[in-house]
Image 1 (cartoon, one colour):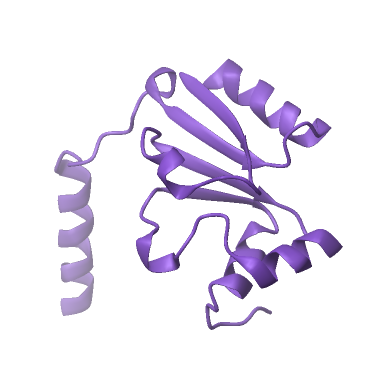
Image 2: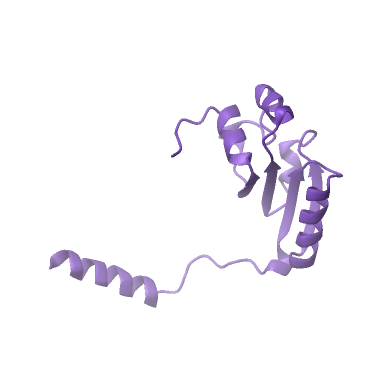
Length: 126
């Protein structure tokens, strides 16, 4: 019974209190897309984003430097699985050192797997 009262109190408080974080309006959002420049996939993503957010820049994942993301609100990392991606994972993460990366990031394709490998993230799937 006590647990139910606590749950209800938290639920009511969460509902009644205004949120402390406000979502950015999409027309003001600055997005950096990291992918394989020149591919149809990259062009489709960039085209879609240009129609839906304030500012978009598409950059090659291979030549990207982490400081290029400084002026953007969010980064979209598109990193598919392929033989080339396996070789890339042996070199470096496109986002640089894991401890230094703080930018909000959306992982597309197999970017989660590829980053986990190169950043040596422990875990599993299943």
